[in-house]
Image: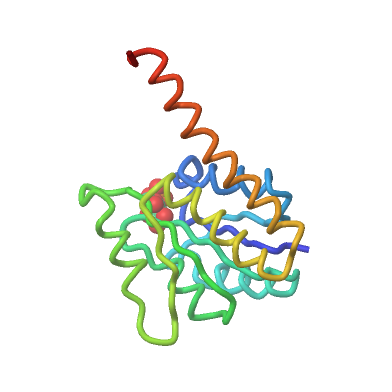
Length: 166
Ligand code: RP5
């Protein structure tokens, strides 16, 4: 069973995608991960989508840089939600990937997140939130994760106040 399939356009995207995979793992969500390029391996991309769907995949996460068409290519081949992570990989600073991932035609949405690791983290969050609609155990895990983020801010503030406060 693979509830989430992560695809990246190149092995050079691995470090960017790592926080996504780590959070899915922490949340106990079974996922697959593979390299496939919209342009360099279109047949492989199609086969991976079919295979992932056959294994129960509910959400696809696609990371790519430059003319980042991987998420769109996957969206063209599935009705499952597709989340896109644009990756900074060129002298255009990632805007190329943001726009390539974002500007999909009607009927083929890609939920396009922030650039790079910030987007990778939120891709795991968003996939988990989608899955949690039908999974109360996962929903309560997400509540705990949110509470931990809240506590982190409060603790950081207390430390800061302890250092500089009157
Ligand atoms: C995209 O081009 C990949 O997703 C990567 O972000 C970028 C550069 O790929 P490599 O030249 O490192 O393989 O297709």
